[in-house]
Structures are given as structure tokens and as C-alpha cells.
Image (cartoon, rainbow, N blue to C red; front, side):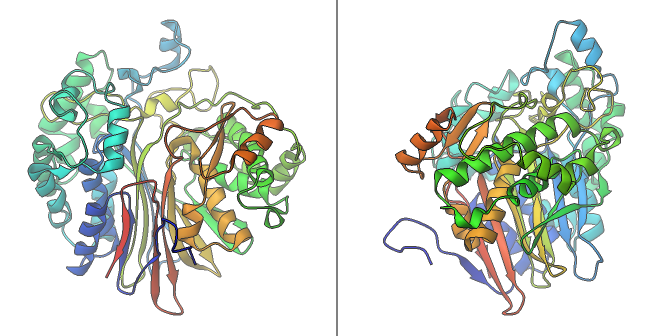
Length: 526
């Protein structure tokens, strides 16, 4: 139990259904969908699309999503990959020929085709209970009427005020500036896009006037995107991957997601007696940092589009984890094994919903960097993601940019399964931090016996490309100890990531909701 003398959050309990996400309005809408007869799929889509209005610097219909769904009666967890692809004409060789060594995040070359809308429509048709029109109605209403900007959202908006380019400034700045907390943000053009999707489904987005607006806007900036690229967009059902830590199975998406990184990191940490260490001490933070360096190095070398990933079994092998763990010196930091190949970012939203039938959804949705590429379509103001910045231009690399390839992707929803049953859908936002965040969350639960809310509240650290970010929740003594071990320690300007989780107590019939105080959101149930 938390110390009620100190600021913090209590766990939210409910019996009929629950949503945990990063904005309270989205959580409320999800619960309303459940109360009106919708299921967890309906509620999660409604909340996710609304988050594109509540937190437009984080996500939107120009982005991608990944989804895990546990459907009662189905033999396994369902994984849906809603990530888009590079245009057919994209070529790493061509960009190298222009003298580039990496894809510039705010360039049209970084824009991959949005995949989320196709995935939402597929998910709704296959597993939802309500019509797509009913599910999108709240987001349409709030896009027109406006949403008061939350405190954390305003803070992030100001941090990225210079990101929107050209017409995007008209759509995503208020009188040329990031809005203050409480200011209404409206996007009526998106309301029109959502109305058409509600009426005609995914074709309204990927073909016709909306697609023409997106393609023309990209081509005007030198993009190689075509109407055929948009029309060909299709999400894929895939088989989840998993690994065991203590008595918990951690279920993740396969590549092109980087969930395998979290599984490898857990396997490395399993070689050490974390339970004997102070959960907020330097020894634990150091071991986690070293494990992250090694796991992320493997990620950067092996993970890519599923059709180009050949070393997944090697990453998931316990032999690999044991060999890597043997490289860790408990008292001395190693140099980063390899430069982080993806661009650093922290812009993502996460939604988890459990309904009265215990259908569970774990959904993550993002435009990558803050405001994505910063490029928006002229007429409808659709803000494009810059997922292409996750490709490398290195010749022969499995994650090299290529036509109709998916980039290595950093957003990863997760579920915990125990004794064959899902006990907790959860997610940790924070870009590159996400696999580290999954490992931190799991070890907080398994090694330190924390309740999900306490596991989320606990301080975080992250060794990222030579910079060990250590939140203010750690003591100065811990920071000094880490520095003495050779880490380059800093206190990050913003907290590390955000998280949500719902624990399913099947025996008692009670849902336990946990939501990160680092964000504006909450857990709500009924």
C-alpha cells in the first residue's frame, strides 16, 4: 500500500470494465462505449482515435499502431500489425547517392504510409461489436467542438513547438504557438476525415479525395509516394512471441516490432539475483543499464521487416542471454556496444481496455517523433508520421530502407500471461525506452512484489546512446555511485516514458487499473 502522506495514485478497482490511458477524456469515452454495449475492441479504438485529438503531438491518423487482443474462447492472443510501409520507389542506395548517411526525421523521405486506420477498420470488423460509425462518433464530436489541452500535453507541445512545418503550423498551432493548458484545440478537418471513414471504411482514407490530398502534399515536397502505395496498405495478423520471467510469460509482437528486445533483456536480467538488490539502488540500475546496452545492440543488428529478419531465434535463445550476461561487470559500465540506429523519440500513446467478458486489448499508436515528420496534408491537415527514420541506409543491413518495406518499429504493446491465462495487458510509452520499460515493469512485479500502480510509479533510469538518464526519484547518492562506475549520468528534462496496466483478478472478479502520474491520464472503470 502506498504512503498516503505522500503524493501518489491509488489503484482503481472495478468489476464490469476498465480503461487505462494517457488522457482522462479518452478513458471516459472508452468506459461509455463499454456501458453502451460495446466490447474492449470498440472501446480501445474509440479511445485511441480520440487521443489523436487530445494529444496530437503524440499520435494521429497519419501514424501506425500495434494491437494485442485476448478474446475469451480463442486459443491464443491475437496480434495485429498496423504499421505502414515505405513507398515502392524508396531506395537506400538513392539516398546514399545524395550523400546521406541517415534519413532526416523531418524530411519527406522519413514518411511511411500510415497504417493505423486500416488496422482500426480491420479490428472493428473482425472483433468489434458496435458499428465503426458508433465507435468513431466521440472523436468526431470532440474534433469539432474542441478538447481542453492537458498540462503534460501542453508541456510536450511547447517542447516541440518548432516541429510543425508549412501548413502543419496552421493545423497544430494556436495563433502560431503551442496552446496553454485549458485552451481548446479543434481540428474540424479531421472530423470530416473520420466521418468519411465511419461511412465508407478504410477505402475512404486510402483511396479517393483524402488519399489524393495526402499524396499530392507529399509529392509537392519531393516524396515518392503514390496512390498505389496508399491503396495497397494492409495490416497483418501475426503470431505473438513470448518469454518467461519468474512465473510470468511476457507476450510481445514479433518483428518488425522490437518486442524481442524486451524478451532478450529479461533473459539477461534473469541471470542475476535482482530480488536481493535495492529496487531503487545503484546495483539494480547498473545491471539494467548494461543489459539494455547488450539487448539494444542485438536489436539494432537483427530486427527489421518480418520478411528480412533472420536471427529472431538467436535473439530469443537463453544461450544468447547467458553469453551476453557474462559480459557484464557488476561494478563497471561498458561503452555502448554499438550506436543506437533509430532516432530518439518519446511520442506515443497507449490504451488498454478489459470488458465484462474479460476480452482484453493492449493497443499502442504513434506518429514517432513529436508531431511526426512535421508535415501535414494541405486540405485535411493529416499529420504524417516519420517512421522511415527508423530505417538505416547501411548497405546490406536487414533494416535498410527499401520499397514497400516496414521499418524496425519501436512501439510495443504487451500482455502478461500466467498459467495459460492473460492476467495483465500493459504498455510503456517512451520510444526507445519501451523494451527497457517492459523489463523494468516485469522485474518490479516479479522480483520486488510491487502492485502494478507501484511498479509504474517507481523511479526509472535508461542508458541511451552513452547517456544514462536517471529520474529525480533516485537519490543523489545513487547518481554518484553510477557515475563512479563509469556511466555518463544526467537528469532528463522530461520524465522517462509513461505506462498503463490493468490487472485481472479472475478469482475475485475485480479489475485493478494503474496509470502513470507522468502523464495526464488515468484508469477508469464501472
